[in-house]
Image 1: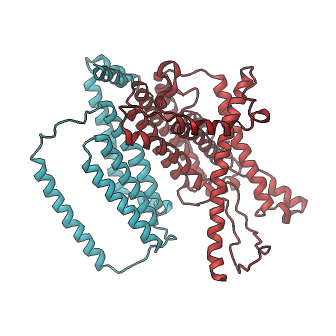
Image 2 (image 1 turned 120 degrees about the horizontal axis):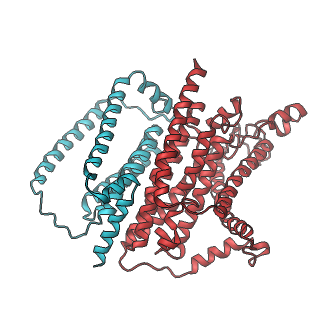
Length: 371
Length: 196
């Protein structure tokens, strides 16, 4: 019996972790939609949704029920299998990177003695990451690059010219800006010397600047701009330019399939915010928190490795992400849309050379630092 | 035990996708099946403790090369009822190559059966990024540089070919200078053709 508990318990803990992570991210995403509508309303001098629940807090659930109960239309001449596959690909590719997010520091002082059964040695170290893999950065970039198929296939299979044009534009845009995004990450990877997301945070904590935004400012700017294009947001929302393309690649989608695309877009926003935070803003690390704990003498309470430290760091992590999400919405309320040739020129002739220059500059600096 | 289950799952997925790739007449279905093969292969690499190869497999093959293939298929907008009567002689070439591949497979199988058995250890460091990088830029530096030069030549060749094609063709020139305008123009003309 003891043996069974000992083997089953870690699996149970991980399962609960996975459930919490996915549910948490999806809830944040749902409320990002509401936040976007509210903030856009304030920017434009409106009130925003305020009918469902106090201040409209139940609006995401109302929207969800509406999506579920709407009629699911399928265009007559669409390529059925791919038409059904596309939204699933989009959402899966958007949601999968959650498994490598570093949600907080590892809790090293876990005390399971409050449990009614004996765990023996048990698991004393509880990392707040579902899977700590060696190639976290590449994993996120790879999975999000698969998301292009959702959009391209949706545009093609709908058998509608607006959808096809939207899908083509979107995939061209995502391929172009993926290069700049990848090149802007290389600088951070070189400074940190690892591709593991937790390793990058640890390297930032040990670096003299604490946050890589200072030595990698060019990389940060390039990453941020490329992130807007990757997620098809204003000012790069060409695929959904209403005046030209109706709704772009998801013109022919309705009900829950449209909701999947909608969710995928907001989960992608969350993903790039997480990547921005982890690569450039030190992830969950709040400068000075462990120093305060040491000087005040409350290291048992919120020193490095304790549950309270993890909780405070996790909240800091979420606040940084919310900052980026707010920035996204703010930009949407402020800037007009690019023209398509402007977008391509900007990506290939300005952003990519800038990112490559940053890479070369970082190579030189790292070489002289190491020699 | 778990590894074996995963291996058969992903290997089955890869073979099923490969069969569907050859079987389908619609080129886009074939392309999607090929993406399935790549992803299944990447999953097998992960079970073999080689996460870097797995990530690069998805990033390069599934994420970049196949996107271009899908792009071209979408732009050409091929019809389903294209006759496949041409290139009959390729059946024999394909059959011959398939036979060679089969013999190779049996040889690899034989060699693996002869080799001493070894279980996969997920803590193995050979497949990790640091070791791959270190061996690429020390032990295997010459092959890496040769491949680099080869790729550079391919890029330059591509640019030169586009330049030569664009001479005297206004639409193509636009596509070279301002990104994809020429291509989207082509889509529009295709769509107009389809409407008629």
